[in-house]
Image (cartoon, rainbow, N blue to C red; front, side, top):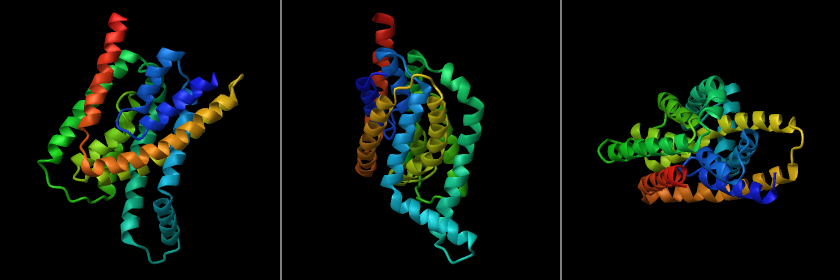
Length: 265
């Protein structure tokens, strides 16, 4: 794999993983234009960006880890972090189950530019509905285990390339009464175990593939990591004062370009 190509895909992954525009969908689209894509390489990029989440939210993750140890030791704990920990653990279950069942199908059948374009539009409709409900429903901003599970089911929509893991979880959180900021932060934390598992699994597969250009892989991963850090900060800052509508229009515009290129190019 060419190092420039790997850097470009790392840039795309770093930007799109944390914005609700679908990193997998963009990697498929860029891969179809440049020189095809690799599921294993995609997963390594996902692993790099989840490391960016860990670094960015290290303080929260450390508190959650301490909470877990204190619960095991039957020591006094802050119930807020216990509730958040339960929500994250339970919210991860749907993605693990559906990921194991549907990984092969989604990884082959749906790696098609036109299908990605269609799902980009469908995801936009979900965001539109979430924004509509956001302004007409009561928001209490509470994250508990049942809410975490429901958001986890929304996250599984990201198994379909073009939907967006962060976008599905954010929209789900908004529909369940969370603020945009709380929904965004929870979606990033919820992505950690799933992306770590998928990235590690695919990285091992990549390691067993003959002729792997590890220099290109490393360059792509480093770019994805640092760009991902910037994208996380941008997204959390953005949702404090803005809606998801700019991403809706972007997704629709990308879908229109894809359809135009396929049928007119």
